[in-house]
Length: 76
Image (cartoon, rainbow, N blue to C red; front, top):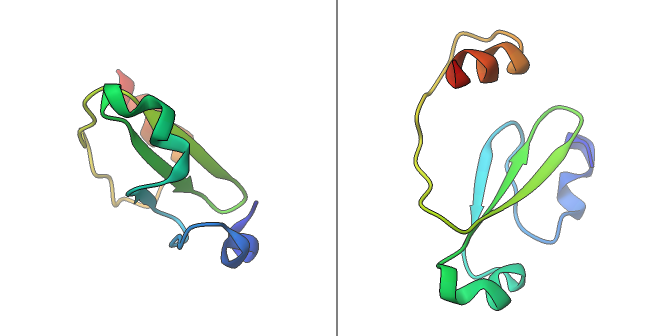
């Protein structure tokens, strides 16, 4: 799904951001692990990630460079 199709997403999603879904049906069978569902929207793709561990923001980059470069720099 790209940003033009976000309005068709089953959850309200903002473009070009990380969106946490509270109470999504995907998390029901993982309740014992205290899951968190995130929808990460980029220009041409929407990524769904179900975290079953603690999640925290480790970096916020507003320099406007390529997303893969930002991810690589954070992982270093």
